[in-house]
Each structure stands twice: as structure tokens, then as C-alpha cells.
Length: 399
Ligand SMILES: [Zn+2]
Image 1 (cartoon, rainbow, N blue to C red):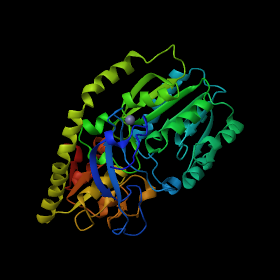
Image 2 (image 1 turned 135 degrees about the vertical axis):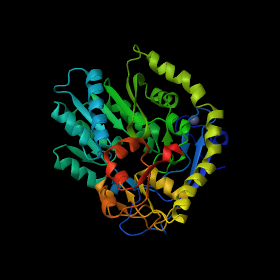
Image 3 (image 1 turned 90 degrees about the vertical axis):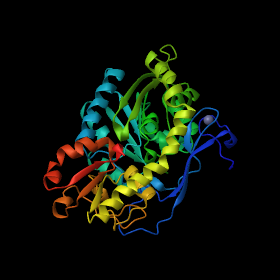
Image 4 (image 1 turned 60 degrees about the vertical axis):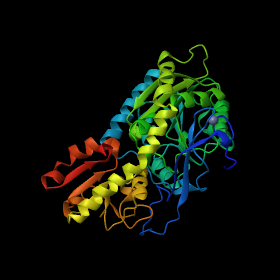
């Protein structure tokens, strides 16, 4: 056992139990040339025996995010999700004129642009240089860098003390959670903290083992997120479940102890005693080898019958699943993705090209496996043409 320490409670590794162990390429490491020889990194998922936090042992290579291309703003569903987010924020934050919002990990500025258009004063901070450029192009003031103590002075200079700090799909990437919470405590004296993270209950209940990959170091429940926020004396007062990235929790928290955790939060914590019990998690782990075999069998049988197959969804989940199954271009012709930044690049560790949605019209295959489980229905609905041309969609979630 390594000298690993839990990212939330600092408990030593001796009490952590291993859930998944593998060795995979980095799921976001798409290259412009086939990359069968891409380095693989150990992936070891553990659960802290003390606080129950599910997390990866070890860290990702440094600078991983500096050329990051993943931007989730490419679907109609995402746009609707953003509208819902803005609505909830307005409800929680009240009068928005002249109020200041900081978004940590602001990506290409698509959310801040909406908020700016709605009257908020906005500032983003983002480590990926290409995404900062995209944000600045659409007029969203964005600092290029990581949110850390050294950045606080620049943030205050540009926007003062923010009334709201938004952190969507950031916390799960961080090695040093306590430092982040300390910086937030320092910056956000009595404002609103809005956090969205994938909800670990979903992949556990739905047996989505491919939701666990190197870029996400932590997998939060309401129980563990509440414990982490408690370190900075932030208290959750609203929880929403959102469809983002296969099911997430959107949490509103502040320093106001008088509000206390609402009944909703308390109910979540109670329910997780069952939905995330050791038995449930053990059952999840046991099914993984069979799931991988089933998926490989579908593609192998199609190939044997002279049929061709492709995939849909080259995000981290799709790439992780492909890596687990060991697919290459001789069994999976291509993978479609709506994110144009990925087009004409290759699924990490493979010679499988990533192509635009229209590609199948000229390069028909018999079957498309939908790896973007959260968007499967929407993909099928908007691509009737594929089925009319004689193709079949296969939902991975049904396997
Ligand atoms: Zn712990």
C-alpha cells in the first residue's frame, strides 16, 4: 500500500479499499496522429474507510489542462441546462444588477457570457490558453491561470470581492481540495458559493465504470461534499440534481450557519447510507469485467457477421470505455463527436479517428454504439436519418 492520504479527511491509505484498478491512456489526450503507443497511467479507484470519499490514488501529470479542449457547450441539451442554471442562480442570489460573479474554470466563457448579457459583472479564471482566447473573443474578461492564493490579488483588482463564486465541474479535478476551500473562504467573505460536480451515486447505481478516469480525482456524494465544504465553514442550503455529464449535483452554499443544511440535504445524506453502502459499491465492482466482455462481444459479433461499427461520443467516458475494451479502427471505424475541437484527431491510445456528426452520411456503418449515455435519446432523435439508412443505434447504458 502506498503512502496515499485521503483528499478530504487526510486519513492514511491503510483504511482505503480499492474499487477499480487498471492502466489507461489519459482520456482527454486526443492527438492529431494515431496514438496506439500513447503512455498508459495506472488508474486506482479507492474509497476512504474513514469518510467514505471515493477518489483516485495518485495525481495526473502536471500541465494536463493547459491545452485542454473539452468544452461541454456543443449540444441543445447543454443550452437548456445553462438556462436552468441561470434561473436557479437568479432565485438564489436575488438582485443581480451590479453584482459580481467569479467563475473558476470558466472554460470558453459560455456561461459567463449569458450571465453578463443578463446584467451581472463577470470574471473568469481558466488554465487552458485556447479556451481563454475563446472567452476573450466573446467579450468575457478572463484571467489565464489556476485559482490559487497567488491569483486572489488579481481577482480582487479586477472584480473586488465577488458576491457569487461558481465552480462547475472543477472540484473533481483538484489534487489539493483543502487549499481550494481555504482560498474560497478567504475570497468569499459572505457571498454565495455555487458548486456543480458529477454525482457519484449515478455511475455506481447505473454501473458506469467508465465514469471513473484520470482527470477526475474525486467522486462526490452529498455526504462527502458537505464534509469538505464544512472545512471552510460553508453550509449547503440548496441541492439540485442536473443532467450534466451523466448526472450531477448542483449545490448552493454559504457561510450562514443559521440557514443550516436544508431538509433536502439531510435527506440526501440519509439516503446515501443505503445507495452508497459498501454492499452497493461491492456489487458495482463485481459487474465490471462482465460488462466489458459484453461490449467487446457486441462489436466482435458485428465484425464476424461482416457488419461495421462506429461510436458516438469521444468525451472522457467514451475514450475510457474504448480503452477498457481495447478497440482499434479495425473493429470501430470512427467515433462521432459534436465537439469540433476533436475532429480529425484520434481517440487516445488508438488509430480510431474522431469525426463530425454528418460523417456517417458518407461513411455509413451498420451499428453506432452511443458512449455519450446522457445524450443518447437526443442523439437518436436528431439522427433518424441514420436508422432510415438502415443503421442501428446501440445504447451502452442498456448493456
Ligand atoms: Zn477520508
